[in-house]
Amino acid sequence: MLYCVHMTVNVPQGMDPERFERLKAEEKAVAQDLQRSGKWRHLWRVAGQYANISVFDVDNHDELHGLLSSLPLFPFMDVTVTPLARHPSAID
Ligand SMILES: O=C(O)CC1=CCC(=O)O1
Picture 1: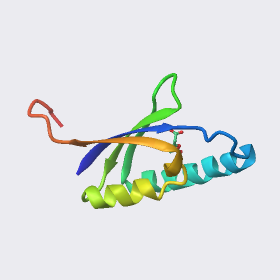
Picture 2: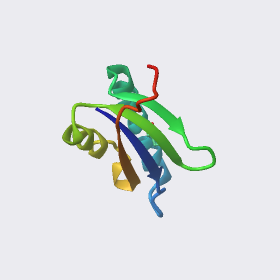
Picture 3: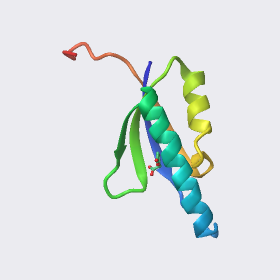
């Protein structure tokens, strides 16, 4: 199943900047592993915002929730999930 996920990162006020940099590095490593696995199909920056639009390819809502909630930056994100269905005019 495909899901479009909009993640907005809220930089935590007062957090030690070094700790936040470590969290970002951990987030990058997890995100790149999931992209290599094929589960995180697309990762795009939303221009002008500390946000991304992603497409996940996972078995079900529970798997998606497990992946998203294990992201290191998850506690600092607003997340919106949109399940995707096939468009009848799509050619691929
Ligand atoms: O920077 C972001 O949009 C949050 C994020 C998701 C994966 C990643 O590496 O950073």
